[in-house]
Length: 194
Image (cartoon, rainbow, N blue to C red; front, side, top):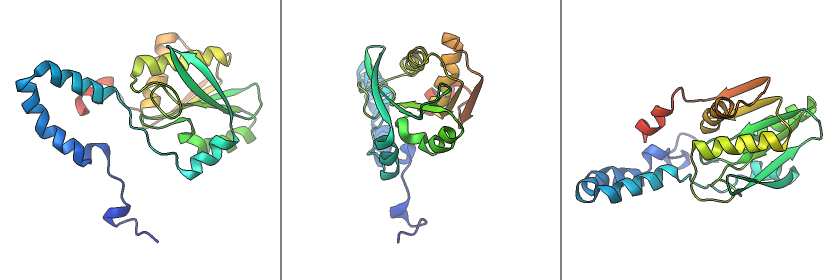
């Protein structure tokens, strides 16, 4: 059994990844020698979410879902749903996640009488695209809102939480409740942290 305190079993965070350390050294040099190239490379990295292998526990929920595809902002968006109620709740995953990332909410919500809807954002999971941003993610939420004739609630985590708030503001989505988990308080933080 792995010891959770051992270095091998601990996940390396994005900011602590060895490749990021190399970029921190190379970018100042590249910015001086070729500022346009440095800016383009930085933007590409900033807009490219990592794609991780689906864990077994998420694959279980993915297999139980009714899966469809919708078009949003010219991207093919993979949509998952569980339950058959007319009351809908949307799950919005974090950066580098996928629709099943918040799957622990599915069973309790279905048992409470809701249809749970989740999706792989553009450039995430099984959806098309390699890069995305808040404009595209929030437009995807709006397209899902139209497709499912509204949501009674949104549950959103991290980047998904910020996009849920942005979608409500940008598209005037009507929903009774929004649950935000680990939401950043200002979009500038993302850019400054990057």
